[in-house]
Length: 512
Image (cartoon, rainbow, N blue to C red):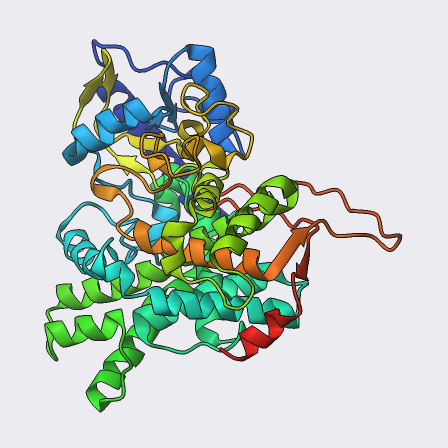
């Protein structure tokens, strides 16, 4: 009986999915052509031709093949549009922002993994608008972002201290730095070690973003009926994974929120973004206000920790691979800072070369190669091609930031592309805007992210010579500059050595 019930449920779901996809396929027939793309078959579309990893590279290759910066494909009845150039991104996400500000519904991530509270994944509705307003107020460029500089500097110096104690675990030290920073700024909660329960829980929750954040990674995103399949069924491993991740995602948002609310009532809450929001909306906020507060705070952790962590690791990797660039950046550091003090964020205006290095790190290996996907809410037309309502619209940030028409030799790490001939920041150079998105969904915390990356990079450069690791015979180990694939892309483990530049590094760090 158990097997019969199993077969009946699966058969019913698949039949219903087939019928619904066939209806969608027929309803989307239109007189205008779709943008070019891979071959499509009825119902399944291009599902069997889609890349399984590093999709952004394949999408760029498709653009060359079809001579088009906008592409179209279908997968199991779901339409997808790929945006591969800055010009198309501006046209759709900026000039028509009202049409493209929505997010696709992701059954795996939102419904099963418990990430529906995240502002980056929320649909374009009133909950999102209120949460976005709260987030922007406390993280936007200007006075709001400057207010966080003291904590950014403290955490960067603690990063140097941790590496001095153990130079072999760069990945975990950098991850801890950003966990500390966001917990302090957002919640006023002090974190001392990587074993802190807030940090360990968030790390488990964030794994779901990496695993399931791109629409279509799991079949349930294409066939939503599958979310009703019982977890005990064969082939339902995705349900078992999601069950574990969802409890972590819920705790990530609600746990620190409850802690801060209780501390505010007791009069013991430290200054933080969330304390300011709780005090602003009072003891009895509406359900919408309360949800927006925990969403804004939780999103700050999710948005900042993984992406800036990736960018900092990319900076170290670039310094190892391009020692001449590291030398030039350090010479600038010596002229401005010297050896008797650590760098401060106020030094940024006097160090354009290091600023260009950080900008190039974000361009060269952007942490979000496919950004966060959009959804078009009405039928639209671009360059004579039909974009059907409900399409998932993918911003291929990697392709835009590696466009040979904009960036000469885009695979080379070259901070000079953002500098004038006399070494100052070139305000006419093409901004790598795709790093932070476009339109109404552009990242409102970009100023904080760039400040944090800069002070982390400056502190590491001031304290350490970054070079290749050596084997037991003293030979340098070849560095493999591979990158992971997923929503957040970061350097695969590589051989490095961080050597203190002078004897007073430890002394100055200890005297902070």
